[in-house]
Length: 281
Ligand SMILES: [Zn+2]
Image 1: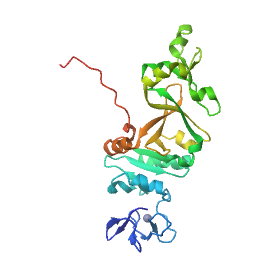
Image 2 (image 1 turned 90 degrees about the vertical axis):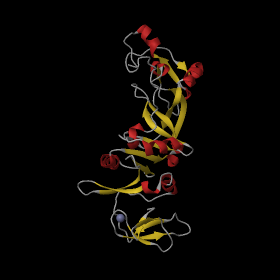
Image 3 (image 1 turned 180 degrees about the horizontal axis):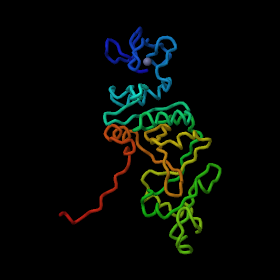
Image 4 (image 1 turned 45 degrees about the vertical axis):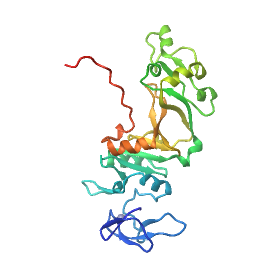
């Protein structure tokens, strides 16, 4: 842990430090060896929060993006269950930064416990299995509503450069056609429509996660994959066809939004321009 109470104050570890756990109140000792990331540990093998994972420099980097008073915040449920959130913002959003793989059961219990939760997942460990491909037009744009994309898969070249059909064209043959039913049409390739796609692009891309950590695809709270760099990939479903996509979110925007917004789902959601109105009555 990054904090323990020393003389009732939250302190970072220091050589020879002794303190007590901010969650369970038991004794802690600072670990400040030359080859380890400095941290606090409970005496012996005590574990007061079974959800807590050993911190990596990546965890610490994420916590340090937030004010000190937002880090390692204990939560107590009405039934007395207690857990320590990695980050909790003043507006009430909990951010769990997760390096290790997780079971569905554990993910579900944390989502239920915290409710207003955002996952930030360390993607550096599976980056070689996580490919980000071509741009997609914003799903709500006219073009996004018209195009039906073939899911990109690593070993299918056409799909990773981008191939789709136009729903408007399918409807010439079958007026009942939707993105999910009665589709026909001829394949359209990205190079034929690139300019149009780029004009409607807002950050969505096709991706393929080979041997995915499935629990993140099933998450009910927003999931951001940190693949390194200035932006993160938020996992999304593109449209009613069920196409999975990612949406790039700048880390600075993410931090700004989770500090300000009250709802985890309102983070980094583009606000559409309100149509101009002349009626001011
Ligand atoms: Zn403890």
